[in-house]
Amino acid sequence: MNLTLDEIDLLDHHFRYYHPTYHDGEQRLEEISLDAFRNVNQFEEILKQVESFIESDCSRATASMITKRLGYYFVTGMLAPMTLHSKLPVVEVEDKKLIRLDDQKNWFPKWSNESCRALLIPNSARENSVAHYFTVLIETMVLPIFTTVHELTRLPMKIMWENFATYVYWFYEQLAYEIVNKEQANTVVRDYHTIRGIEGAVFQQKQNPITHFALRKEKGEEKRLFCCLTYQLNNEHTYCKVCPLLKN
Image (tube, rainbow, N blue to C red; front, side):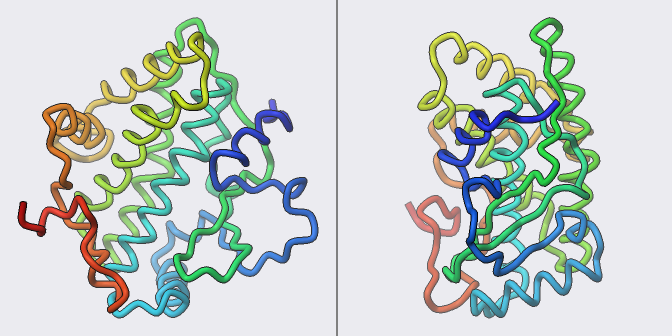
């Protein structure tokens, strides 16, 4: 089963989703296979490329920024179509690419699901399907990439998981409701509840980092637990508004 053009159109409109139909004639300035992020040597080359492109002074801060981008793509390129269209793009890194079409120094390529192949999420026993495929996504795509980043840069896993959790929260608590109708809103709630119920062991953490992040938000705690290191990129960057290093 494939995503339809209408479904792709919605993803292209709201997110950084790439499809040749909508970018005909635009030059691909950079093209990176997601599979490369799972290999230490290949990721080292990617890190050097991005570091040079954004003129970063700190490899670890660059790595954190990259995992922020990846967190955004995992949510908007995988979880969003699962929840919005009940279609999860096949969880294979080989047919996923990051494609840069501009020279903006914030380095924010588009996400490409090259094959457009997707798995149907049935409404019956939806929770079981979402729990299963989300677990597969973490174990075969997210965790191996984060592990590679950690091995090369020693960037703490807790920073990367918070980068990821930030986008999960943003989509399921905020943006999704600007897109869906009332009937679909129930699916958003169901999927988010299922994701928050995943055991911490799946993430190789004591707690589900998404649930932990959401619970802190529900208590009114706006600041991150762990600094994302953005201020270390270069002189043009400073602390994020929610940086835990900032005084109240």
